[in-house]
Length: 113
Length: 118
Image 1 (cartoon, each protein chain N blue to C red):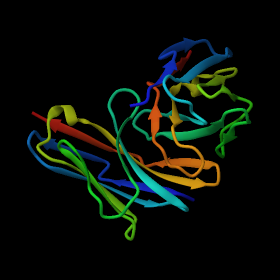
Image 2 (image 1 turned 180 degrees about the horizontal axis):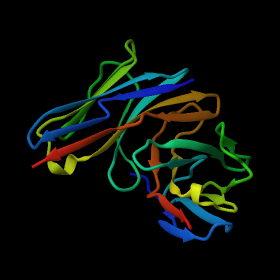
Image 3 (image 1 turned 90 degrees about the vertical axis):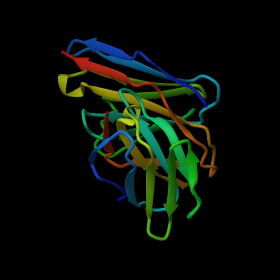
Image 4 (image 1 turned 180 degrees about the vertical axis):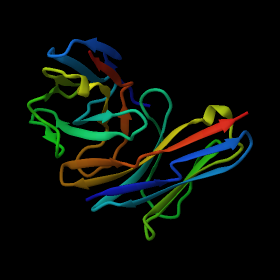
């Protein structure tokens, strides 16, 4: 059974801190790992990682994938209160025409002023 | 990025009624759409995968006769919760995939629909 585990489940920091969110996966026929930010409604896309060791960056956010260790991290530097959200990672599988996404439980990040 | 529109965003209904939720990809053709369910403080749980023109594939434990999914066109999928009960109250989210075949593509989410069954 495909499994995606995120840690920590929740995290409280102060503005300006740097945080690292973890995601490990056991996904058969793995194709990519996705990171999403979910505030009050639907998740918004952050990153898609398919290659090991290549860091993707977007502003203060960055992410990297280690396909050997089946692991990914999401870094947020100089956190702001607007970063408070649930961060979800998901592993994707493609087998023929079948495409499937398995989500982790998410990390609830709270950034206090 | 691509836009996925979901409607209605909120619905309240009486027990025993049926509710239809629409999911549209506005600026791309989505060969595959997915329906998720999310309970408070829990992650997204995949309910079913919907391919245009074919029957949906349901995840284990999801009743296909209760959650009817129709994917009649490349831009529209609908989820109908039939004979809804209070335990069906949840946040339902659809997503659409831009990729085809073995191309990963990206996955974009609708805004979600909060269903409350009284």
